[in-house]
Every structure is written in C-alpha cells, then in structure tokens.
Image (cartoon, rainbow, N blue to C red; front, side, top):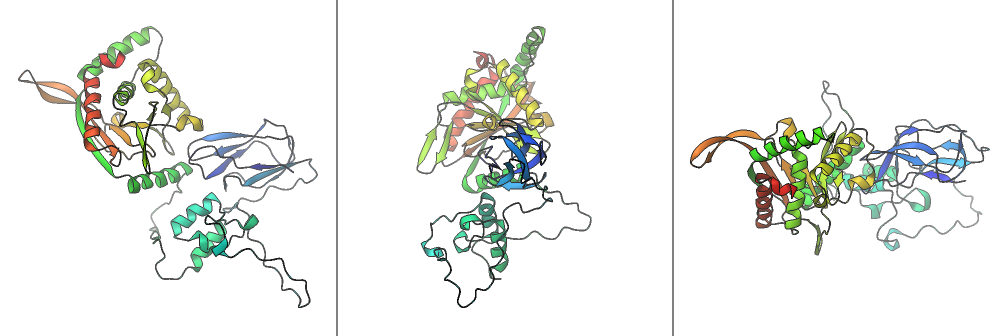
Length: 410
C-alpha cells in the first residue's frame, strides 16, 4: 500500500507539522488532490497525493510533528481502513517490544547487527534524532537504533540521555531553571526554533564585524515623494524607502562583487547573481523572501514584488524557492522608530545591512548648520571573507547612491 510521507519543503526543514488534514479516513483520493497542509519553519504548504486510492489510516494527527520521510498516512483500496490515532508528541515509530526468552532447544537466532565499531561512521538517524543528540550531548555512535533497519529515533536519544552518567557529558547542556509560578510558557513555533538554531550557529561560526555610516537621505525622501505622486497618478504602487534601499544595495553589490560572497571552507564563493533578501516580520517569527536579480529590476518592480511577498508572508503562503538563494539581506526597522541596530548574518550569506529610521539632525552645509534627514545603516560582515576595508568600500558606494538618488534610477 502506498504511504504518504512527510516531504522536504524547504532547505532548512528537518520536520513538518500537520496543520490540517483535508481528507479523512475512508475518503477517496486521486493523484493531485490536496490531502493536508504542512507547516514548516517558513511557510504552510499544501501536500498533494501522488497516487490514487482510499485514505485508510492517518498516522500523524493534526498539530503533531514528523521528520522528513516519515509516513504520515496510508492509501489503499479501503479494506484496511482504520481509526485516526490520538495526538501524540512522538510520531516516530515506537521501539519494538523486548523479545521473550527462547527455550534452550530453540534454533539459533539470526546474526545480530554488526557492532558499533564496524558500522558506518554516520549511523542512520532521523533528522529530529540528530538535532536532539546535538542539543543533549549524545554521541550517535554509542546509540543502538530501535527504528526500522536500526535507524536511531527520538526515543533512543532520550533514553541515551537519561542513561548518561552524572559526570559532565562531552557537550555540556544546561537545563533551563523551572519557571516561576507567575510565568506562562509559550512553546516556540517551528519558525522560531529553526531561526534560533540558524542564528546561534551564525554567531558561533561567523566572526561578525560591524560598520556604521550616517547617510543624508534628505534628497532621497524628496525623490520618493515625487516618484509616488507620479506612480499613484498612473495607477501604480507606491515606492517605500526600503524599496529604494534594496535597489541601491543591489547596485552597490554589483559594483563590489567581493561582498556578494559566501564562506565555503577552503574557498570563497562569488555569486554571479545579486539576490537580495528582504526581512519581513510576521506573527510567528521572521521570513526572508528574496528579490532575485535585484540589480536588473526597476524600483517600481521591486516595490510590487516586495509588497506581494509581505502580503503572502503574513498568510504563510510563500513558496520555499522564494525564500532561498539569497546572497545578501536587508533588515529595516526604521518603520518601528529604531534609529540604529546590528543584525545577525543570515547564513550562508556573508553580510546583512541593518537600516534605521531617518531622523532630523543639524548638519553643516556651506559652513551653516541646516536640518537634514539622517539615516544610519550598519553592515554586519563575516570577517572570514569580508574584512573591514572591503565592507567600508561597499558602504561608501551605497552612501553615494543614497545621497545622490537619481543614480539609483539610472
């Protein structure tokens, strides 16, 4: 009988949550039918059936999680229809029951699995089990898997963690202190869990260096007002300050390909395309859709695309391919009144630009103090591949573009 398995829907996905089942046990299913909604760390995606049949069993209930590749349902001819299981926090296969003692005259048992020292250096384990092993300091080589074909599952890791000696493990893991009585604990969303892991990894692996410039955006704001008057009259979408920043960033990256890079061990990867990620805050976390080839788009095209991204991000309807492949990210908190901040690099990128709000300041102009609109931008660089001088050169070009904004439109 064909199984419905948890698909890989994003590059960072290790497990998915069943947001909703669109079919119930006993329903007929045709190839191409949407059978369930899957919530990943980035979006809610529709899961389509690849086979015809009858949904005989639902193995993972709504609200429950399952690792990639895990069966979540079974299709058949309807003869094996069974009830939907109760919700469980451990959707992985349960460990087998211990075998009863064999009589003395029993036939010899099958040869046991090869010992750990002769097994493959990377023991088979579910993605969830690998993550738990890292978090709890469990050596996968020391764990005997109880899943199919000896696969290590979550229950095995939890058992190994409990059996570990009281002495400090190879990787120290500090348990959180009990919550006070007047505290409500809210579980992390899938998006928040993945973001926490990726950004922690970024800070641990990539040595960050921060460079800040104060940019006079008085003329930029005036140009934006003129553009929007023209665009609205023509029935087009308005352009935001961030749209102009994204366009300027793309032009500066094209002029400084040494910033449009990624660290990859023994090599530096220089990206031919300029693909700018635009951080979008949503209720359950942060999403970063990517404007591909941003240097080749007009400002109004970037405005239309980012507006569409923001609307679909709030509904968790962005496609995985729309949130991967970025080579640089822009994070703007100016709309929240934040004047300056530093951002954590979004791996595997090598830099991210934090954009603050424009504020009026007195600045000398021809020897006379005048009020100008000043916006501070901070570049976070992976110092392994983008040093201070390289980042400063990029910021100089970006500043020139923003302070002479007609060049952005050229």
